[in-house]
Length: 69
Image (tube, rainbow, N blue to C red; front, side, top):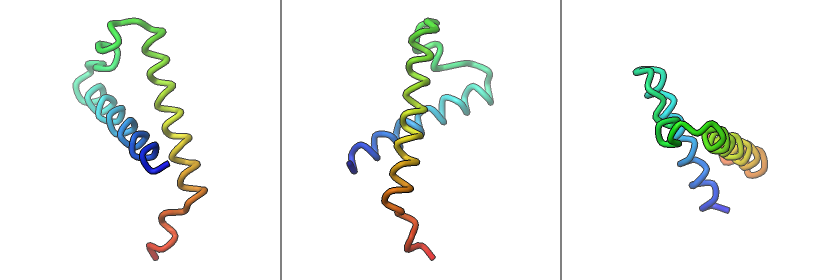
């Protein structure tokens, strides 16, 4: 479970960097890596949604920020 959470965090960080490059430069690196294929592009983007839902579940189920106050 711990490794899955680390992997999902890594995926979201990578996609965040791709989004920042697109926002700052206007070059869609993810679309370039998918060779312009729209189906692969959407499939890879759906992985971001799965990673975000996993981290939401992890934050709600295990409450890692409970002891920060």
